[in-house]
Image 1 (cartoon, one colour):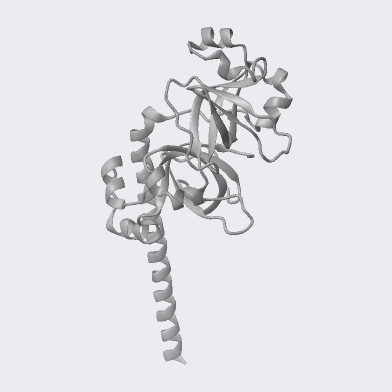
Image 2 (image 1 turned 45 degrees about the horizontal axis):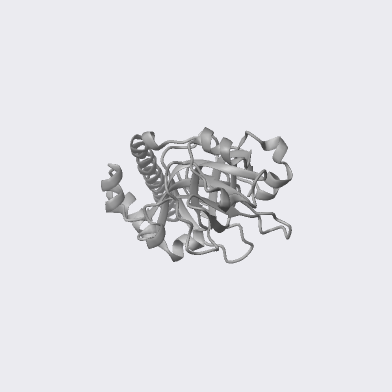
Length: 279
C-alpha cells in the first residue's frame, strides 16, 4: 500500500507540474500576441480612424430622406452601375422595390468599382437631395448634368469614404486581388484566441468561411463570440517573418511556431477600426 501511495503522489506531482508548464506556455503565447498589438499600435497611430456612424440600408435612405438630410450615414451595398466620371448607383437588393440612389465620390481619391458584381462596397457620407449647382459649389466638384437628369432632387450620398467590402470567402478565394488594400469586412466573431486575435465568420447558416483578424490595439470594449461586427483594415498573407519585418515586432520561437501552424499563408486582416454592425 505504501508503494502505491508513493506512486500516486509522484503521479499527482508530475500532473501538477505539467499543468503549471501548460499554463505558463499559454500565458507566454498570449503575452507574445499582446506585445504584437502594442507594436502595431505605434505603426498605426497615423491611420487610426473613427468608426463609421449611422449604418443604414439604402432603402432607409430613400424612405427617410427628410430625416437624414445633412446627416452622415454609412451604407453597405452592391454597386449597380457608374454614373458619369465619379459616381455610381447602389440599391438594397433584399427588397424588390429597392430604389437605386446615387453615390457621388467626394473623397478626393479615385475609386474603381469591383469587377465582381457580387462584391459590396461600404460608403460613408452625407445625405443630400441632388441639386447639382449646390453640390458642385459646396463640395468643389464638377458634375455633368446630363448624367444625373434621372436623379435630380432625389436623395444622394456625398461620399467622404468608399471602401471595398468583400466577404471572408471572397477574400480567401482572391487573396492576390485584395492583398494590401483597405477593406471593410463584416461577420460574426468566432475562435477568440486573445483580446487581439480572433476569426470573423460570414453571416451564413452553413458553409461560412473564417478570416483571421489581428487588432492593432486591444479593444476598448469586450468582443464576444457570436457578436456581429465590422472591421476596417488591410488584408495580407499571414507570413510571420514579413509581419515581423513590416510592423517592427519580434516573436519568440514558440509563438512563431504556433502562429505559423495556424495561419501560415492564410489571409489575415490587420485591423485599423472595429465597431458593432447590424448589417
